[in-house]
Image (cartoon, rainbow, N blue to C red; front, side, top):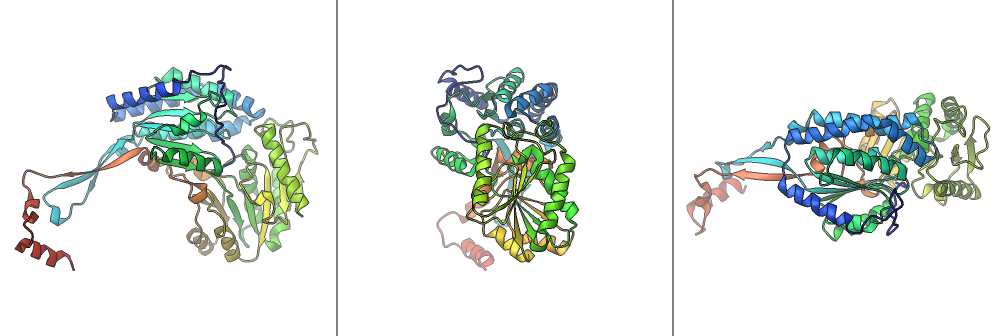
Length: 486
């Protein structure tokens, strides 16, 4: 993902004053001590914590919407509701209904050689969890790991992005109202604790951001052997088959690409389209965009690029592609000028090549390259020759083709005949693979990520193991070897 970079020693919190250098250490030690005092919170405690978080999110939703809108200069109210508040609240409801079941130890089999005995797996919280949040979905990508960590009974410290200071201030204030800092603490992105945060000896660390920064985070974590969950994004392809109705594919890709103007880790990064259908895709995609946004520059429902620096980066990608031979189709239904705006209309890029910068890294904006292919096998080979993406989208109603794509590609997740919505399915794990990340959370997998699955073997007073004690070479040893080593 392009959306998060750790800035080292950039000091200044939301009130423009530097937090004391010892604040991070003090709260970290306080959370460790609190965890040792209560290392196995009950289901009731966990449910109460989550319900308090849910109620606070609902109560503060207008403040959240306003703060994110300020940070983006224009963030669609509906996109904040749909992609930040709604899935956070639903994720809490989902977890609350299942915590008791998740916490229940699971029985395991004990072989005849080790009888009599009982075996089970206990799920204990790992301790203090660190969460580094990106700017593109600053509420949801803070709340998601927090929900999983609290469900598992942990203490949590969250570092927000310096690119979203307003929501960081609102979220920090909200958390301070409902939780003591020895349970949950939030740090703004301007508090000067960048490198210190990632270097702490966390019991688990979650980072969402770019692949390049993810490598730095993992190096820092390795000093303390800290387990990490990395959500890194990558270039998620959308493959259009030779037979799927183009209206179906183009409309759903248009929604996925325009949501948050492409500033989404699972946004369709590029399209693989049959060569003889490329012009049809361009035409229908353009119509779909225009039907969703008849205007863009002054439209409060059309989100801005997060800051001028990101807009300049995206503009440079377009210019580089044009200079290297790409044909650029700008979709600007209102014929508006964006010269002085932080907004940017969507651009389709045709005739792209691997030498173009737009095809080298995750785009993270409203640019959509289209790569033509001849056979589905060629499209799958194109995907497999590149780093594994966080998401893959395939548009086809043929079951054999669907099975082929599912079994012959690797990605963090797959959606057939749509884009992005798998992230909001509470019962699906979410996570990348390879350069798109490692580990996963959401659903029961999130509970497991933030838990230690501790194997437990319970023996009765009678000790059957003594029969194999030395001296070796007894008849019982010979019988065991003859019966089981065959």
